[in-house]
Image (cartoon, rainbow, N blue to C red; front, side, top):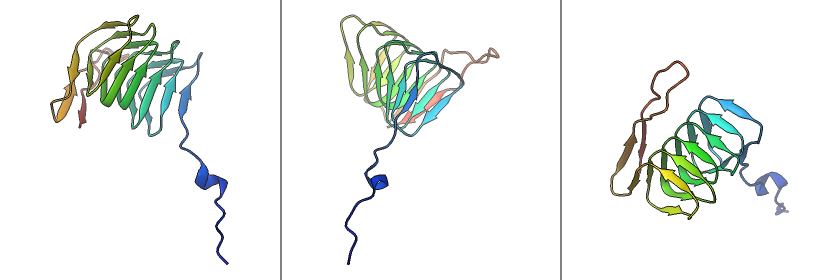
Length: 142
C-alpha cells in the first residue's frame, strides 16, 4: 500500500567540489558544498562548509568558510567560523580569524591570528586584483 523504499537520489550525499592538480582557476570561487583545492586558485574562495587546500594546492587570495584545512600554500587571509587546521608542510602568509586553531610542527605560518571574541570579523585583503586594485574587504558575521 505505501512505498517504503528509498530512492537512490534521497540517499545521495552532497557532492564536494574538487579543483584538480593541473587546474588553474583565475577569479573568485563560491561553493555551497565542501571544496578541495589540489590545483591553483588565483582569487578569493567563499565556501559554506569546509575548504581543504591539498599538499600541492595553492590559493592566492582569501578564504572564507566554516572550516579550513590547509596542507599546501595559502597567500592570503582566512576567516573560518569554526576552525582552521594547518598541517604537514603547509605555507601560510596571511592573517587567520577563527574560534579554533591547530598548527602542526612543520607548518610555516607568517601572519596574525585572531581568535573568537567578536560578533563580526573584518579583514582587509592584501591581495591585489590583476588590474592592480586592492581586493574587496571581507566581512563574516558569527
